[in-house]
Length: 153
Length: 166
Image (tube, rainbow over the protein chains, first blue to last red):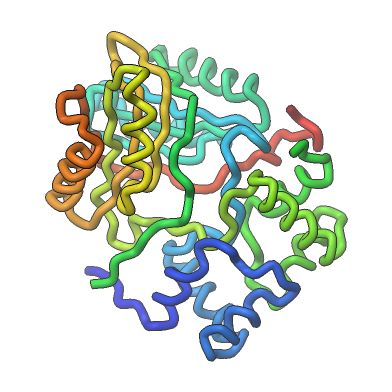
């Protein structure tokens, strides 16, 4: 079942993915823009966060400025996938971890303060699982991250 | 721009996002030893320098009904990659477009795009549109839909940082 969104929720989700107000009271700035109270904005964002729709209000960093990251892939025998995926996810440096439809069926992002730390996580996963980890670091980024374009039905 | 130890502390304090309180920057400042005005000034500087490329809501697209998430990959000759990538990255439904290394024989692809949608069929149509727009129908490609999401969150660069980790 798909959740229904109020107009305010839609406007927050569409309009606040970038250029979040750099003002001492950012929620009041947004409230004024949308003609509601600061409290309503805060409460609505809290609900969206509790529902798992908004992950956080935060900074998306340019890759390899504040830290180092890579995309990694593994070919995991199907019966072992839940266990191995859980083991991979248990590393605090792993930020995203997905099963994908491919022979290489487990795909995850490792982000850490240094390149050496990322390499150590890969080494640990290879050692503990006995499976190879493909390391696919970013070489060149082409897109500009403007947030996620939403389509409301 | 060279990040200072203060900037790194600030980014670490921000890893869980802004708290939902009336003065969130003041609150973040309390966690990293800065006053509100300095938090705002450092954030502004990092945004202008491009270290922070986007500042705002980070959405979990699955919870919004976007469950058909495809990583679309291509094997393009090096000289054809950049022109194709520039076209792909400008398509509104392509949310990421990166060059990564090939790892033959298991992984021959060097260009990675993400296309998210509510239905698989629609995503596949968009893959066709993207391929046609970039003129890369002849390039080997694969579409890897996600099946299960085991974990999704922001990075924790402050995790093991001593304050000036490289």
